[in-house]
Structure formats: C-alpha cells, structure tokens
Length: 328
Image 1 (spheres, rainbow, N blue to C red):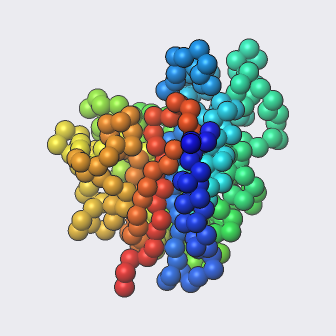
Image 2 (image 1 turned 90 degrees about the vertical axis):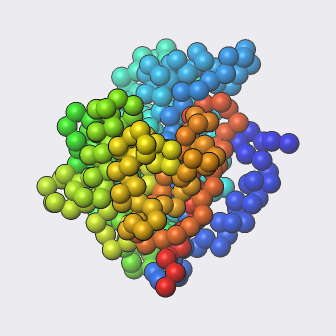
C-alpha cells in the first residue's frame, strides 16, 4: 500500500541504490554521482472536499507564492523524498523563497510555509534537503538554485549553508525576468572540480519565447553574457541540467530552440544527452512532454523519475540520474 510520499518498496530501492553512491571516496577518474533536476511549481490540484491540497489552496499558491513549492504538507512529503533519493547535486526551478513572506497578507499564510516562518528560519530548499546540503541561487532569482550534498563537495566561494545571489549568471533582455541560466563551480571532496549549469528556459510557444530559449541555450554553450565571453558550461567537466521549457525529442520540427539544443547535445555532439529524449519517451511533464533534462560532456548515466508526494500538485516530475565518467 502506498505511503504518503512514495511506496515502501520504492524507498527501500532508493536507499539501496544510494548506499553505493559515496562519490567523495573515489578518485575523480572513478567518480560516480547522483544528480536531480526538479521544477517545484505546483499548479495542479484536487477538487474533492477532503483534498489535502485543494484548488482553493492552488489559487492562493498561484496568486501569492508564484506556484512555487510552499505548501506545508507537500514540503513534508518532499523532505521524505529527498531523504530517500539523496542526490549529490540538485537543480531547482520555481522554488518559493520565504523571504517574501512579509509581503504576503497573513490571511494567506495558513497551510503554507509563511504560517510560522520567521527571518533566519530555513528556506524551502533547506527544509526539504536538510542540513547536509549547501545551496546557492541565481543572482536576483532565489526561486532558482543549485544544491550540493556536502559529503560530495562544496560550492566555490559560498561560505555558508545558503548563498543567495551567488551563482555566475547573465541574462537576455526581454526574456522572462533575469538570470535564467547560471553556473556553479563545485569543489569535489576528492580534490577535483565540476561545473554545473542550472537552466530555466523561458516558457511559452510564441516566436519570441522560442527566440529567447535559443539565446538562453547559447548562454549555456557559447557565451553566458556575464562579460567573460565564456559559455556557462566552461569547465573541464560540465553537467547541464534544468527545465528547458522545450522538448528536444519532439519539438525540433516546430521549435528552433529545440533544434538549437540538439546543435550541442546528442549523438555526435560534445554533450551527451543523458535524460531520455525522443518522440516515444514516456512524458515527465503534463503527461505530454519531456522538458526537464540532464546533459554532460564528461559523464554518461541512467535516469529515472520520482514521485515526491501522493498529493496532486506538481506538473513536472523530478529527473534523477546516476552518472559515471565517459568510458576510457
């Protein structure tokens, strides 16, 4: 029988899988790690009278919480999910930042993290991950963050548990609000370094939306637009993950941004497409598309999806990938 978060069997399998995932103990040549990309937006809901997360809650989340992860019952389930999966690196998109709680009227706090939150309390990301992780966010965008399990490594230049406005980033004018592409340099416990790029592509189907995503993918692979002239993925070993807001396996015929992704990622390209992409791939977004992805120029791996909660809330499924270096 299903528990509140995930099945007992699934939990047991995840914990067994994680037991051998002690990435920090090996050399960089033999490094293995688990990464996750998780868009935490919660636009879905249930109409039933006994729903734990009703459509009335969803309406409040939409108006006041940016649809970001913020509802206490879902937070608790998600915390259990992370305790089971124990990723080494997480890319978050659309995660609510409780520093905004004072701006939300008190009548909309009940049931949400703002109900009891006080300045200095853990953020949403800290709450669901626990104290074993370090978190750094895009400049000006605390809804988009990278997290690293501290047994695996640390985020270069971040000297505390959470560093807002910390990641290296640039932005494309007129394309959906600030720094949607950002980079963090991970100092791995074995002494090596790893560059991780978090993506949250502009959403929408209009020609302008597609043009924005083309420019954002160029930020990843050509020029991050921070004045350095370097791509976001500028390390010796790079992992690129996040919500592309386009489906490279289904959309190439109609979306130039999907085609632009495949200019850099896929068979014969510098970057390996690690997460599943293709017209017959099981959808992980809105039961129709695959827009959350993981790619790398240094790693191969296998991915699976997780179910953070039994509550109807998320439209994206987290993508979890176990990575190992390219074969010699």
